[in-house]
Amino acid sequence: MTDGPYAVAAETYWRAGWKAPLPLPHKAKKNPPTGFTGPTGSDPSYPDIDTWANGADGAGNIALRMPRNVIGIDVDAYVKDGKLKRG
Image (spheres, rainbow, N blue to C red):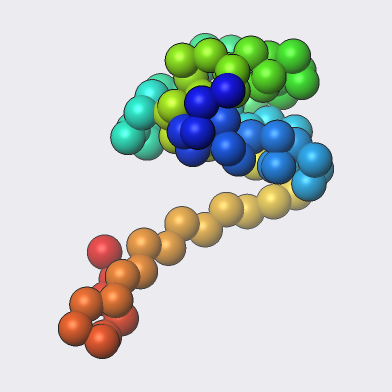
């Protein structure tokens, strides 16, 4: 197993009930595997997640496919010179 973001976090999300952790390319914020996003996308199986985590995808970033009853809010907040800045 690699020590990349996906490899480190995917199983933790799975065990916490988030059944669709998806790998993204290294340092990327888009392009998850085809067939797992959008209204017709399916959740990956645990063997899919294990394969991604233990292969080259394990070094990449992680994305979560939100369940229908969850709203995701992405907040980019940084501290610079002791003050909170929004990016």
